[in-house]
Length: 453
Image (cartoon, rainbow, N blue to C red; front, top):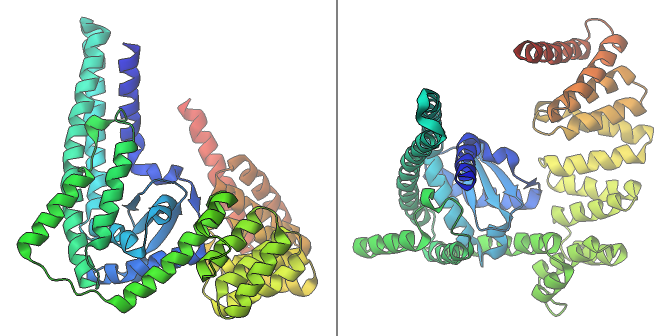
């Protein structure tokens, strides 16, 4: 009985949190990788009738081959997909599939279907409890719940399988229309099949929502043979896509894998740009900072207009306590890629650590450019607080820390800093009024929680 109850609890838990799974992911940020993935997605979005400017790419630190879409045209890509792919075409095939989900409205309907499934499951729980209270006993209650969960999951799984098949068909069409063929799709499907064979068969196998990779591959290839569809690949773009892929895979290798494995993949005898990039990162990660700087300086000498090499140099200098020196390469990276928020944030941190009047003023001017992004990047508020504090504006520093803690969900700290800001800032000042709003919001929620109890 206990084992059966635990299984049910697991399914119920999945139903309740499935729609919000992105909230619990381990996300990493990297300008170069995000831009490369956006470059891959842009023509797919255009051909699917979507706005490429609305793309929001997120990198998930996870070694499995996977990607998924969420509401708001958010696309999540696992690092495992990049590391285990052989070329860009495999990644693009997966992105075409996810674009199919977004274009078909599958993501929005998935959330609605999950709500329906959840209501069905909760109703079964209520009916089970009523039956138990009427004398049916615990077995009747558990049976009712299991039946409701099975029903809800079956409906949801059937819906998902249908949508997966539809997304596959859209992917094939998008690949053809963007100058690709099915080689990437075939290759990644075969890798997914291998991954499936290694995964446990006990984890909700009865409720799997995707058709098996082999089944999907056979269906796609069979349909293409019947249609005798002709593909006309754009080999120039494909070469550019694959060159970008070689770089980002090498970068991930250097950061995520042990140095020994990186050097096996990218030995000293390999003089290609990706191999040199991976070895420089591996040296930096291993604490061989002088060696890493020598390697990155050599790359900068050979590729003086590459912003990502300057960014890496700035990062190495900053994280080894040489902030004054880090500002220069970060400034160069920003000049080469002025719309990069991540590079500019790196520059701001270096300017703050220089801690002279001119650098703090420059940091303040740069932070003003992030006014509309502070809700997405809480770090902006913390950096703002440091600048305010070092320039003697303690009231504004308290206000910025209130915003920072509120963004992180630290309500007690947000309340404390908001109280300080309200007392220290002039009456009617916008920051003082906003601090009052924060204080009132936190206190209202505390009152509401007290009343519920």
